[in-house]
Length: 491
Ligand code: ZN
Image (cartoon, rainbow, N blue to C red; front, side, top):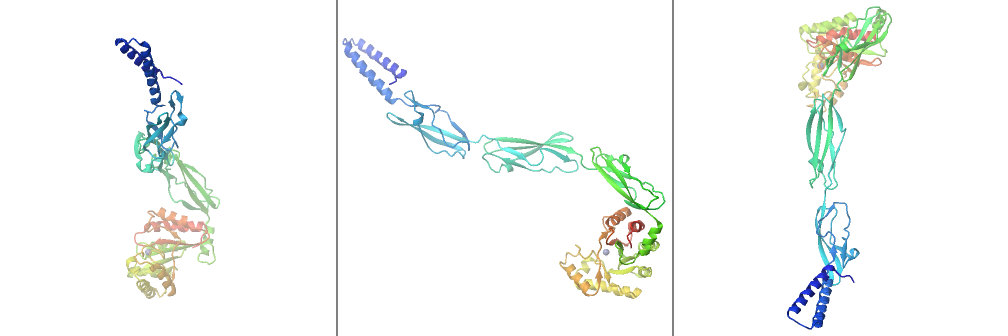
């Protein structure tokens, strides 16, 4: 049996006090008083021993556990009468380790006079910061020509959900070509996270080369090729024309196709190249090709078609070029007056095809109904017959057979395509567009659109217009025909 110091000292002090009291009262029978003293001493000692509380380590300290980290609580180190009784301690109470909160539990320790109970507060806490995960590059190359487009981000957290909506984004300027995107987020327990995306502004826009003259050229055998050069403009670095490198050459004494390449790079090394195709051809060959014009069975054919005429300002010029080049075309015409009637007659006299575009070009009227459309073509058909004696059955829908201009009347184009054929007409669309009624702004645009669209082994139906004021097509036509002839495509 172990004795406690404190208990012994208390007992001795008690004994001394009693002895003093006995002495003062002059009780002579010391042996009796000593006996009493011993009894008291034993009672105090025994009582103290029985009432002794177990010693639970750190009981006054709060217990903190990170959420989802624990599954049970160990008994605290406990001693009782100088003996380690930790293994007899029972932990009572529920703690949800996966849920933040304050919990009360108890430790129960068996003692000589029953079960000793101590309360303990347990805090399940979240002290782990969330993690921001950036989508895309953390070091981001941003084109100066574009707006920054956030590649996105995600947030991972040990406890809280949907923190991605709580992310705050700010921008920090570093310099002229650099800035930071700063992402911050705080979870519901106040744990903060920060992430930075470094954005570098770069020039990734190549310069634009514009060739002087046509992108494809044809020159006669033994003539001189004169390099017309090109210009280069870069959005950032400005005029780079002087930096253009031109490579390739044209042997004008030998028939064939030659390529001249124009290359330029801007200060950020974005490179652009453009090629000019030069065909060296002989008059004799061109004549052979021209002689074959109109013959069937040739592989590559160009059908030049002109819509929306006739007009006194443009149609005669086109007819003159066609005559000079001995090329036949098809004119999809609209209603005409007495001056323009002469042009319709001339078109037929010079071997071209006059075809029906329609009496009117007004989409809102002509696509209202099948009847409206049919009378729009028969009206013009009869007029042409009266003017020229020719009955034409060739037609082209204004806007083409699959257009968006008739959308106001769903299904009308399908009905019309069937109806037109059922009534004995033929309709033609196109597969090469000159863009002269839309995107093409210059004769060079018209020329480039057509020559790029032509393919050697098919029937090429080229859409052009002879409406009033369309000089860009007039100016491109001669070169377009030369291109076709030089590349051995028949008209
Ligand atoms: Zn038209």
